[in-house]
Image 1 (spheres, helix red, strand yellow):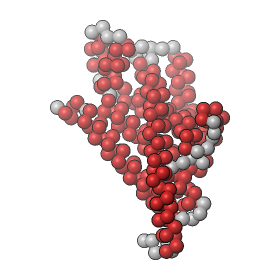
Image 2 (image 1 turned 180 degrees about the vertical axis):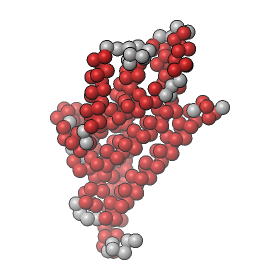
Image 3 (image 1 turned 90 degrees about the vertical axis):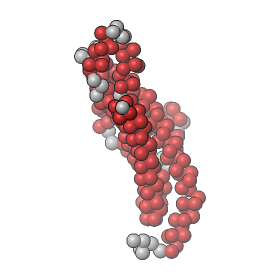
Image 4 (image 1 turned 60 degrees about the vertical axis):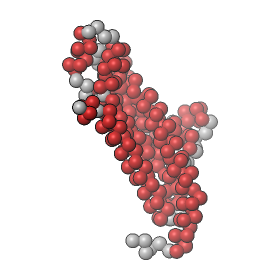
Length: 233
């Protein structure tokens, strides 16, 4: 399979792997985990507003608020990530002081991921059985109590599954951020595989990205199954 790769390329690839891959793996995990956490922190309340603030929800809000929230989410989801990275450069510089590097990558990743996370949260909450919500309302529970003690607990398995999807999506975005100076495995794959035609290094970077996705997907699936009350019984 690798007959087209010269011994010199193998030797160079081994040196790069030994010198740079460990740090690149750490940068990738750092960027992805941090960005996913911030995206969920922003997306969770937005998803809750979309569900509870609906005219048939437990706490309807003025329609213009839903229009604004939906508009922001739909617009940001419609912009390709590479273009979004360029658009938010002023915001990135204002927050972290630079528009390139590992830390700077987190800002556009959050902008790209939180609308996606909001939709996933909305989807998870809408899966909750309406009868359970009606029962809580009949017992005098407030909207906040319903959210904290009914909607979120009942949708935990789905939320975990969707958080895993969000993580893998952010991981893909983080790999693309290498084009504009982001760190991690994506940067190595682009700098060596694309610009310097070191195919072997690019292949190793892709394999590691696949492994990271598989590990976190497995963990997320197991946590979702473990938290599902129906499966426990």
